[in-house]
Image (cartoon, rainbow, N blue to C red; front, side, top):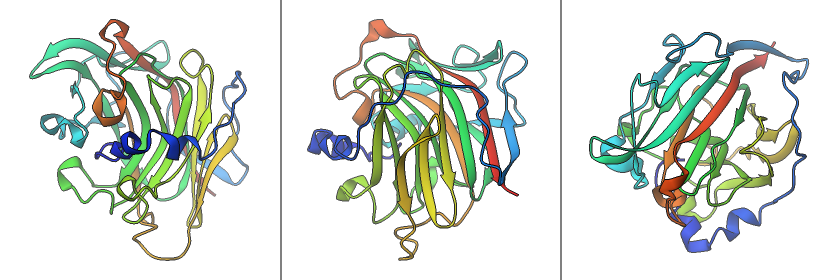
Length: 279
């Protein structure tokens, strides 16, 4: 999500991504969907309790604040601040606020798991923020990697779900590598239309094996990229990755149609995060 990759959307007017397969998803979503029988639960957060997110499971990523996260993003990601990230009523709330903080005009949170995994099924049930200027994401980066390490996109990136407020209901999934990236217009990507994504909870799922990655919404498959066996420049995914949840404001993609300050605050509500691996 976060390394200037979506400047291509400006150049291509979103046509590259939107032509990759935009379909309308059903407007209902069931909770607690059972994974395939070959998987077992290895990690989860059901967001019980109240207060800050569980510090044994989640950390805060703030390294890119001074650099706009490589995307000219407008928010400052905070640490241990319930205004931006809190657990309450069985939910995680990640909230972007319009407020002056440090040298920024917005605040939000970017949570990262303290565990990483090699292969598996990653489920996040969430209701997404609305509002022009929001850029919400559920995604993954290699274990041990941080913004200051650079070397993107060679290290690889999985985007399980991306949604920008100026294009409501359009859900993006992508896999990025050195050869498949926005600079070349070759990123592996697809979209699905979820009309009520900002009003109803849906389950965003990523399945990752040595041979393929797949993205689903409510168990509806809409993106698949198969390992071509052509090396790390196309498939840098043979190492553990960690999960990231965040709500950005603005940026190269999020502010393509400006930022509606009257829309804030905006929140991504997360019912659960569950990680399964094969038995």
